[in-house]
Image 1 (spheres, rainbow, N blue to C red):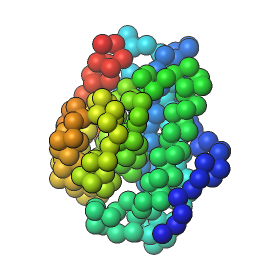
Image 2 (tube, one colour):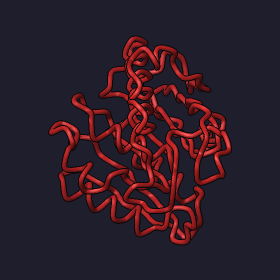
Image 3 (cartoon, one colour):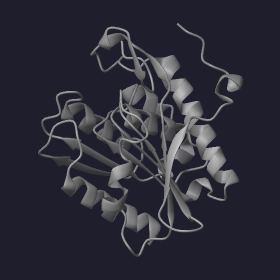
Image 4 (tube, one colour):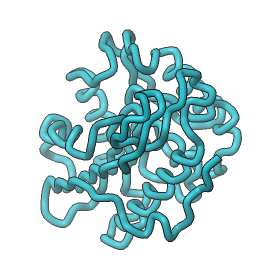
Length: 232
Protein backbone atom coordinates (compact mmCIF):
# COMPACT_ATOMS: atom_id res chain seq x y z
CA UNK A 1 0.00 0.00 0.00
CA UNK A 2 1.43 3.43 -0.88
CA UNK A 3 2.54 5.56 2.03
CA UNK A 4 0.15 8.26 3.15
CA UNK A 5 1.63 11.63 2.10
CA UNK A 6 3.01 13.86 4.82
CA UNK A 7 2.39 17.58 5.23
CA UNK A 8 5.40 18.38 3.06
CA UNK A 9 3.70 16.61 0.12
CA UNK A 10 0.71 18.96 0.18
CA UNK A 11 2.56 22.17 1.02
CA UNK A 12 1.38 23.56 -2.30
CA UNK A 13 -2.33 24.31 -2.06
CA UNK A 14 -4.49 22.92 -4.81
CA UNK A 15 -5.23 25.33 -7.64
CA UNK A 16 -8.80 26.61 -7.39
CA UNK A 17 -11.45 28.46 -9.34
CA UNK A 18 -13.00 31.13 -7.12
CA UNK A 19 -16.14 33.20 -7.38
CA UNK A 20 -17.32 35.79 -4.85
CA UNK A 21 -20.96 36.86 -4.85
CA UNK A 22 -20.20 40.19 -3.19
CA UNK A 23 -17.48 42.20 -1.45
CA UNK A 24 -15.95 40.96 1.81
CA UNK A 25 -17.45 37.42 1.79
CA UNK A 26 -18.77 36.29 5.16
CA UNK A 27 -19.06 32.60 4.22
CA UNK A 28 -17.22 30.08 2.04
CA UNK A 29 -18.56 27.13 0.07
CA UNK A 30 -15.72 24.71 -0.73
CA UNK A 31 -16.96 22.48 -3.57
CA UNK A 32 -15.20 19.31 -4.80
CA UNK A 33 -15.82 18.06 -8.35
CA UNK A 34 -16.24 14.48 -9.57
CA UNK A 35 -13.88 12.07 -11.31
CA UNK A 36 -12.34 13.40 -14.50
CA UNK A 37 -13.84 16.88 -14.12
CA UNK A 38 -12.14 19.96 -12.67
CA UNK A 39 -12.90 23.04 -10.60
CA UNK A 40 -14.76 24.68 -13.47
CA UNK A 41 -17.41 21.94 -13.49
CA UNK A 42 -19.82 23.38 -10.90
CA UNK A 43 -18.90 27.07 -11.12
CA UNK A 44 -21.81 27.76 -13.56
CA UNK A 45 -24.44 26.79 -10.97
CA UNK A 46 -23.55 29.68 -8.66
CA UNK A 47 -26.06 32.13 -10.23
CA UNK A 48 -28.80 29.46 -10.12
CA UNK A 49 -28.09 28.54 -6.51
CA UNK A 50 -27.50 31.87 -4.77
CA UNK A 51 -30.43 33.89 -3.43
CA UNK A 52 -30.39 37.68 -3.58
CA UNK A 53 -30.79 38.19 0.17
CA UNK A 54 -27.89 35.91 1.17
CA UNK A 55 -24.71 37.30 2.70
CA UNK A 56 -21.71 37.52 0.37
CA UNK A 57 -20.19 34.10 -0.32
CA UNK A 58 -16.86 32.91 -1.61
CA UNK A 59 -17.16 29.75 -3.71
CA UNK A 60 -13.91 27.80 -3.92
CA UNK A 61 -13.73 25.03 -6.54
CA UNK A 62 -10.37 23.20 -6.29
CA UNK A 63 -8.87 21.07 -9.07
CA UNK A 64 -8.13 17.51 -7.89
CA UNK A 65 -4.62 16.20 -8.60
CA UNK A 66 -4.03 14.29 -11.84
CA UNK A 67 -3.44 10.58 -11.16
CA UNK A 68 -3.86 7.24 -12.94
CA UNK A 69 -7.27 5.63 -12.37
CA UNK A 70 -7.15 1.85 -12.47
CA UNK A 71 -10.80 1.29 -13.40
CA UNK A 72 -10.29 3.52 -16.45
CA UNK A 73 -7.35 1.53 -17.77
CA UNK A 74 -4.79 3.54 -15.82
CA UNK A 75 -5.65 6.72 -17.71
CA UNK A 76 -4.39 9.83 -15.95
CA UNK A 77 -7.13 12.27 -15.00
CA UNK A 78 -8.19 14.52 -12.18
CA UNK A 79 -9.26 12.29 -9.31
CA UNK A 80 -9.48 12.54 -5.54
CA UNK A 81 -8.44 8.87 -5.23
CA UNK A 82 -7.81 5.81 -7.38
CA UNK A 83 -10.62 3.34 -8.07
CA UNK A 84 -9.48 -0.25 -8.51
CA UNK A 85 -12.88 -1.94 -8.89
CA UNK A 86 -16.64 -1.70 -8.49
CA UNK A 87 -16.90 -3.18 -4.98
CA UNK A 88 -18.08 -0.23 -2.89
CA UNK A 89 -16.62 -1.73 0.28
CA UNK A 90 -13.11 -1.19 -1.12
CA UNK A 91 -13.78 1.22 -3.99
CA UNK A 92 -11.99 4.27 -2.58
CA UNK A 93 -8.21 3.83 -2.41
CA UNK A 94 -7.28 4.64 1.19
CA UNK A 95 -4.04 6.54 0.53
CA UNK A 96 -5.76 8.79 -2.00
CA UNK A 97 -8.63 9.49 0.38
CA UNK A 98 -6.17 10.44 3.13
CA UNK A 99 -4.22 12.72 0.80
CA UNK A 100 -7.39 14.43 -0.39
CA UNK A 101 -8.66 14.97 3.16
CA UNK A 102 -5.35 16.66 4.01
CA UNK A 103 -5.65 18.87 0.92
CA UNK A 104 -9.20 19.84 1.88
CA UNK A 105 -8.07 20.66 5.40
CA UNK A 106 -5.32 22.88 3.97
CA UNK A 107 -7.96 24.82 2.04
CA UNK A 108 -10.18 25.07 5.13
CA UNK A 109 -7.18 26.47 7.03
CA UNK A 110 -6.53 29.01 4.27
CA UNK A 111 -10.12 30.22 4.54
CA UNK A 112 -9.53 30.71 8.25
CA UNK A 113 -6.55 32.89 7.40
CA UNK A 114 -8.84 34.88 5.07
CA UNK A 115 -11.32 35.49 7.87
CA UNK A 116 -13.79 32.61 7.35
CA UNK A 117 -13.83 30.23 10.36
CA UNK A 118 -15.00 26.60 10.00
CA UNK A 119 -18.39 27.58 11.49
CA UNK A 120 -19.01 29.65 8.34
CA UNK A 121 -17.65 27.19 5.79
CA UNK A 122 -19.75 24.61 3.95
CA UNK A 123 -18.04 21.62 2.33
CA UNK A 124 -19.77 20.27 -0.78
CA UNK A 125 -18.93 17.58 -3.30
CA UNK A 126 -20.29 15.60 -6.22
CA UNK A 127 -19.56 11.88 -6.73
CA UNK A 128 -15.87 11.36 -5.81
CA UNK A 129 -15.81 14.89 -4.43
CA UNK A 130 -18.82 14.10 -2.27
CA UNK A 131 -17.10 10.99 -0.93
CA UNK A 132 -14.17 13.14 0.18
CA UNK A 133 -16.52 15.74 1.67
CA UNK A 134 -18.15 13.04 3.81
CA UNK A 135 -14.84 11.40 4.76
CA UNK A 136 -13.35 14.76 5.76
CA UNK A 137 -16.49 15.70 7.65
CA UNK A 138 -16.22 12.62 9.86
CA UNK A 139 -12.80 13.80 11.07
CA UNK A 140 -13.76 17.36 11.97
CA UNK A 141 -12.88 18.27 15.55
CA UNK A 142 -14.18 21.79 14.87
CA UNK A 143 -17.49 21.37 13.01
CA UNK A 144 -18.13 23.01 9.67
CA UNK A 145 -21.38 24.83 8.93
CA UNK A 146 -22.58 21.84 6.91
CA UNK A 147 -21.75 19.15 4.36
CA UNK A 148 -23.33 18.70 0.93
CA UNK A 149 -23.07 15.20 -0.59
CA UNK A 150 -24.40 14.84 -4.15
CA UNK A 151 -24.64 11.49 -6.02
CA UNK A 152 -22.09 9.90 -3.74
CA UNK A 153 -21.43 7.44 -0.91
CA UNK A 154 -19.47 7.25 2.34
CA UNK A 155 -16.06 5.56 1.87
CA UNK A 156 -15.67 2.80 4.42
CA UNK A 157 -19.38 2.83 5.30
CA UNK A 158 -20.36 1.96 8.85
CA UNK A 159 -16.78 1.22 9.93
CA UNK A 160 -15.69 4.73 8.94
CA UNK A 161 -18.72 6.32 10.58
CA UNK A 162 -17.98 4.49 13.83
CA UNK A 163 -14.60 6.25 13.93
CA UNK A 164 -16.11 9.74 13.62
CA UNK A 165 -14.89 12.51 15.86
CA UNK A 166 -17.52 13.12 18.57
CA UNK A 167 -17.89 16.77 17.49
CA UNK A 168 -18.47 15.89 13.83
CA UNK A 169 -22.15 15.05 14.28
CA UNK A 170 -22.91 18.75 14.84
CA UNK A 171 -22.57 19.21 11.06
CA UNK A 172 -25.89 19.00 9.17
CA UNK A 173 -25.75 17.02 5.91
CA UNK A 174 -27.65 17.58 2.65
CA UNK A 175 -27.55 14.24 0.79
CA UNK A 176 -29.06 13.88 -2.69
CA UNK A 177 -29.02 11.15 -5.35
CA UNK A 178 -30.57 10.15 -8.65
CA UNK A 179 -32.95 7.18 -8.86
CA UNK A 180 -31.32 5.87 -12.03
CA UNK A 181 -27.67 6.63 -11.29
CA UNK A 182 -25.60 4.03 -13.22
CA UNK A 183 -22.26 5.12 -11.67
CA UNK A 184 -23.15 5.05 -7.96
CA UNK A 185 -26.48 3.25 -7.59
CA UNK A 186 -28.94 5.06 -5.37
CA UNK A 187 -29.00 2.29 -2.76
CA UNK A 188 -25.37 3.06 -1.87
CA UNK A 189 -26.16 6.72 -1.36
CA UNK A 190 -29.25 5.96 0.71
CA UNK A 191 -27.37 3.40 2.82
CA UNK A 192 -24.65 5.99 3.49
CA UNK A 193 -27.25 8.57 4.53
CA UNK A 194 -28.82 6.06 6.92
CA UNK A 195 -25.42 5.19 8.41
CA UNK A 196 -24.75 8.85 9.11
CA UNK A 197 -28.16 9.25 10.74
CA UNK A 198 -27.57 6.22 12.95
CA UNK A 199 -24.35 7.70 14.36
CA UNK A 200 -25.99 11.05 15.12
CA UNK A 201 -25.82 13.27 12.04
CA UNK A 202 -28.81 15.37 11.00
CA UNK A 203 -29.31 14.28 7.38
CA UNK A 204 -31.73 15.75 4.85
CA UNK A 205 -32.11 13.06 2.18
CA UNK A 206 -33.43 13.66 -1.35
CA UNK A 207 -33.74 11.45 -4.41
CA UNK A 208 -34.63 12.63 -7.89
CA UNK A 209 -35.66 11.05 -11.22
CA UNK A 210 -32.24 11.47 -12.84
CA UNK A 211 -28.95 9.68 -13.57
CA UNK A 212 -25.45 10.66 -12.35
CA UNK A 213 -26.02 14.40 -12.57
CA UNK A 214 -27.73 17.34 -10.91
CA UNK A 215 -31.18 18.70 -11.73
CA UNK A 216 -33.07 21.96 -11.28
CA UNK A 217 -35.19 20.67 -8.38
CA UNK A 218 -32.06 19.51 -6.59
CA UNK A 219 -30.46 22.94 -6.92
CA UNK A 220 -33.68 24.53 -5.61
CA UNK A 221 -33.81 22.17 -2.61
CA UNK A 222 -30.14 22.73 -1.89
CA UNK A 223 -30.71 26.48 -2.02
CA UNK A 224 -33.42 26.24 0.63
CA UNK A 225 -31.17 24.08 2.82
CA UNK A 226 -28.28 26.53 2.46
CA UNK A 227 -30.55 29.46 3.26
CA UNK A 228 -31.36 27.94 6.64
CA UNK A 229 -27.61 27.86 7.38
CA UNK A 230 -26.78 31.29 5.96
CA UNK A 231 -29.78 33.38 6.96
CA UNK A 232 -31.25 31.40 9.82
